[in-house]
Length: 313
Image (cartoon, rainbow, N blue to C red; front, side):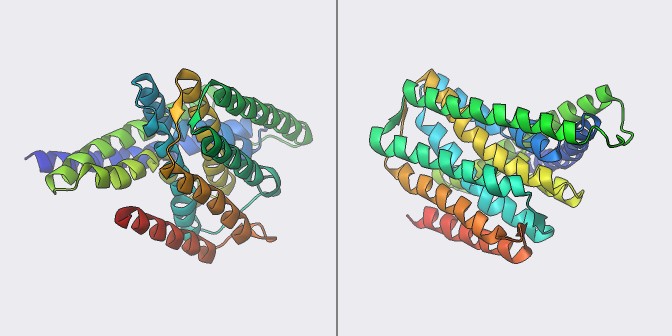
């Protein structure tokens, strides 16, 4: 009876995820159009921050409960999954055209902050108050650049006729309501998948590496796939790149400000792989600034290899 209830709730969770993402992407895209804000900016900010809510909630909660080691594993695992699995799946569904700004700034910036995180973890063995301030310094720099880019985008499009869109309050309602449905649907799916996994005899480690890791990234997956299918590739790509940036700078930066975070040596490999995965993404996009289905398949294969390594290590 409990298993049947959990299966039903998982289905309800997926429905909330899919329909929530539909409203969320539509609302965010409409807001971008209404205020002449480039969709990439929306993807890097509102959508990215919103879909990072599960990671933020888990990591900050862990810090408050003084179990801060969970935070780093959650973020590094999520960032790897975002690039290799989510962009892999999304680009296999529909090839993703990558904006020049993503190739010249967003991806290299992801590389830089991943290297900074690795260096701090390797040499200090922890993320302390100073590290938190440094990460938040990068965060402020990133937000200032986004604001400048948004203002520049509005100025360049000021002469263009603005397409008719829904009422702004309705768009905001769609965005907030859609996000709430995505996050709630994610929680519902993960919680009940844990119950089924436990009933099937899966141990805690395997549950954490599979269901929990995938579950906290469900909002990014559903939102990116939905955005790509709607032709909003900028939101799909911006969502992942922005989510990874927020995960490192906002989430880990905030956690480090709350309490020192031990950076165990086991995390060094994951941090290196985060850097390698972003470099691989840049190589696959290449001069054509296009992530093809073949490129997506390569990313997926890399994630499968990493996942198998985790299970047998």
